[in-house]
Image (cartoon, rainbow, N blue to C red):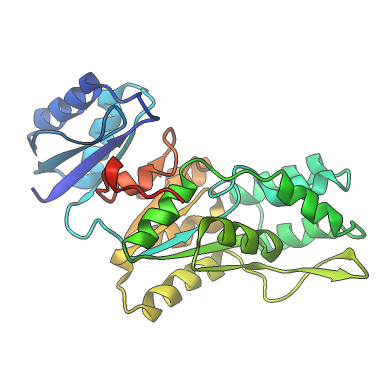
Length: 297
């Protein structure tokens, strides 16, 4: 069939009843809906369908699920396996906002986190918000960066996402409005092929409170997606982008599969696909990978 609807839940939480209810909902709207193909037992299943647009299938699935902790991603069945991944870092590939955590060592975490929240929801200009937050860190010793890194945890499913896509020939790039101190470490830990982010300026072992130019912002993330795709001779339809904040929205919209991952409402409402319940393995199931295909870093 022309389209496929992928249902994904936290491990063990996808029931046959939920899958059957979604299939019935598609059929009730006049769609042809094939038999479910289980990608992972009790976790992920594909429902092939025709006769509805992907957006209609998404909406029908969410109504049928009645608030269950199940994510639904509908798309064309052709070309679902992507050859380029661009991923945001903070609150996407790692579980925290590293700048907010760093600010804790300067005693200004709540103040910085408040600005971060407003920037990620699109209330503030990202460049201005970044400059303001970093200024509050002036004089902080470099050792605080190391301590922040030691406390940084990887998002569940991130290692499998990168390892599996890499093993199947995709290029994986970490692109962040955060800082190279963290992105280079995350990229090395998880196996990203490249990383791009901002650079904190340091003098005499302490942060100056300034960021090197040019600042990587929303426009730069979109440019990175286009540049990396062009560099591999790929159409944007062959790309996957994932993020959670307003500065990710342009690259998420432009990618062939753009995913809002546990995202701010402004991003979740505008992105073509969203993952709110499952971990980052959902992005593999959305591409048709089966549980036995998933590589472990």
